Each structure stands twice: as C-alpha cells, then as structure tokens.
Image (tube, rainbow, N blue to C red; front, side, top):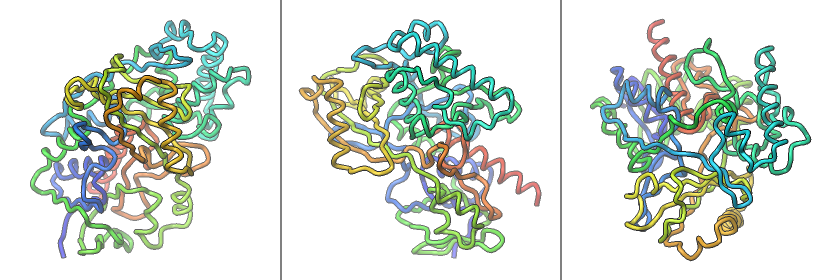
Length: 439
C-alpha cells in the first residue's frame, strides 16, 4: 500500500496541470492514467512524416489568462508560442478577415447590411439584460435575434455557437457569451466572443505552440519535481470515501491519500464514488459531451497561404480550418503543408457516413485539394467534456465529498478548451489551499 498527499486521476492537460501545481506547492503526487499515453486530447503524434495534434487548437488569453498564470508560477520551461494570426470567414467562396471591431463589422459585406445591424442589436440587448440582472443562463441566443435575419446570417451565428458551445443557436444560452477575462468576481463583465467581434482589435493574445501541442505537455513533464509519480495503464476502479477521501483503488493497487483530483468526465464520477447525493448525480448524468471529427490532410502543395485559420460557414457540417504547418513548417515534410479540418458532430452519428460527408464537404469548398493529398488521418475527439447549453447539466470543481475535487472542461463555465481547463485548475488550487488553511 502506497501513500501520497494527492492522487490525480487522469493524465490529460487538466490532470497534469493540477499535478504540477500541487507538487510545486510541496505535495507528493501520484498520477494514474488508464491509457498507455498521457496528454489526453492535448498531445501530438507522428503520421507518415507529419506531426499532428489531437484536433486543432488556438491557445487563448496568453497575455494574462489562466494558462499564463500557471506557466508563470509553476513551469520551469515555457513553451514557445507563435501568434495565431487572423480568423478568416469564408462564405460563398469569398474570404474576409473576421470583423473584430465596429468599423470592420460595418464593412463586413460577406453578410447583408441588415444582418449586421440586427446582430449589433442583439449585442446591445444582451448588455441591457445583463445590467437589469436578468438570468441569461435560460435565455437562448435565438431569442435575442430578430426573425428578419437572413439564412446566411443565422448560419454565421450558428457556426459560432457550434464551435463555442457544441450546440445550435436555439440551445445556446446568452450566458455563454458573457465572460470575465479576469479571475475577480467583481470585475466588469463583458460579452465574450460577440464583444470581441465588435469592440476589440482581434485575437492578439492567442497563439499556437511551436512544435505542436506536445510541446505544452513536454514542458509540464520537464517541470515536474521529484515528488511526482506517473503510472499509465492503470485504471481506477473506485475512489474510497466515507465522510472524506481515504484512498484510490485500481486494478493493481490501493493508494492511500489525503486528496483526490479527478480529471476524467464528471458524468462518470458516480461509477467511482458510492452514495453521492441524488441531486448531485442527477445533474452529472445530464452532462452532454461535445463530439468532434478532425480530418488531417497532408498536402503536396501549400494551398492555404493566409496566416491564420478559416471559418467555413457554408460547409455542411460546419468546419474550422487550421493549417498548422503555417505556424511551424517542421510539422510537415519540406515543401508540404499540414491542414486540419474540425467538424462539430451531433450527439448520435454514424462514423463511416460522417467521415464521407465531412471529407466531401472539404472537397466541395476546395475542389483542387484532392489532387494534392499526401496523407489523410481521421480523429474522433471530445474537445469539451460538457456542452455549455441550456438543456444539459454541468459539473463543478467542488464535490460533496471532502478533499475530492474535479477539474476539466466540464467543471467550470469559463472560456473554452485549454483555457477552460486551466481555469478549473486555478479554482481547484484555490479550494485545496483554502481547505488546508482551515484545518
């Protein structure tokens, strides 16, 4: 029987960041991972000479966001990030930079002028509802949009909803677009992405890690002190609890510990912990994952020359194109290009049919691409473990069990992707340290 201060279940980005932070705070930490690899959906691997990530990623809020705070405090080696560049919108085979301020929005003629005015009205309506204290968590974004908006305009907003929330405009709450760039509860709030669309000067604090996502994982591993153990291929069967956490049971061992950080899907926590409160479980089982398909294409010609990503509004299903080798040419063989195409999928789908439909969507938008394909690789992933939608549950970092905490993209309603995971880790650290002081 082994004893640790902290056992972290899951070696994805949330679990690894938690383990790094707590170990640097002096805790002995054990990481248990059921797979034979670490990193979860934040890692890279090689396919036929190309270095691909687990889905396309833009690392946001690098100037003063949650990952930046964790890197500054706990990383011995900081990954090198290159600017993510512009977001381009593609509609009717026309491409224009995403409109990041009012002047650009007024001249953003990929959408009809009437649509642009109606969407601005939606923005200001959201501001008004916020100021009068309206609970926007139950208000669908579709309720704020005029019925006069065109099909093209609705597809544009729907694209944002699917890639920010994982669901349609009818099931996306206005609350998802209200975000707080700081960690202070009393700071001035703003309308997140829609605010960026009209007010800010662009995604200036977003970046892509040189060397791919694996460089972030490598930096964490390099920064681990000696009081961290990692065990892969070790599945957790139970978290042993009475009034508080006592240990973790795996197929191979029993580990005594003072604290457990669970970074798996919150919806699966009831299978690991007995006698959780009924209302707590009822919420967890209604959590809906966000499903995605990424098609990676290695190309013998550099077809996508713009430095940045593309939002394919006309694609069916909606697509987000990120040519990662534009950020780091070493991710592809010399002279070739590596491009990823992400598609958000429905709750239920047929894998073979979806592969064909998504690939055909790429070819329909970019017909000449077929002549230059050197490598094709498909990934089915869960980029967000909880859809921030009206008709589904959402987890929390704090649990009903003393010294049991959850981290990950299904535990905190802030931002998205790696940033959301990092926010959850910061919240977890706050709770763990507060609990230590109260003893």
